Image 1 (cartoon, rainbow, N blue to C red):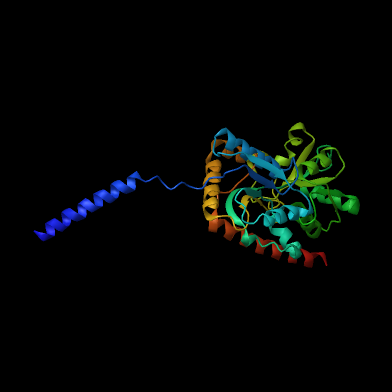
Image 2 (cartoon, one colour):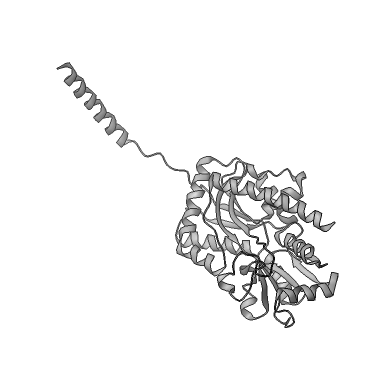
Length: 328
């Protein structure tokens, strides 16, 4: 009998407790309380700039954020200015950074900056971007990589490879081309990827290493043409363009397109942004953008993205050492 009474009392207490808990308001998830600065570590018109503005458009169209996102271009010093800016905003939950591979290379090249990428908050890798080697469409003498090597070798240091800045992805690939094929191309920095593509289209440079989106204003108009792709397989949008692997060099190179939070970002804010950008990634608009611009890769976030960062940092450090040896 006592056992039955105890059960009745326990049930009554549990019922009262449940009623009390149900009446409590739910704990609100973190949300931004003001507009968000979305920093782009490159100039206007380049691949990163185009992607960020497309992402913001998707967010606004689908009403995924209660506050606006403001694109903020901070080019200069191969991404150093943007990285320092983000570091200076430690603990700020209302600033994000969109990356290039200078996220890895610039801290390696310039240790005096005190940038440790492991201190940043990993939000989401939206894609890996691709690169192609480009020349002006008027170069009828260049139809293949062999033709390119022959023409560049003949012109020596007079051959201008336009790029975005020392230590950037295109400068690494220029070093690779010079070292691998015995070339002496002169690397000339012109700012962001869009500006670099324009230099080629207007014949102020002999070649560039651009991603597809950066050449989107010129290639469709017949002003530029790709010679070889730095990808394992031919790109769907450039099926007539062979890869370096097909040309006897088993080499490929991608650029991460990731969203990064400031050091010390609150865990609940980081989780909010991870959910937000995963929703963006899953939209038909983003998937269509990836397809049209030859972007690849699954969405990575949190510890998985951090591991990717650290692996890429080590890979770029080894590559830098190898290129230095090859230059000797």
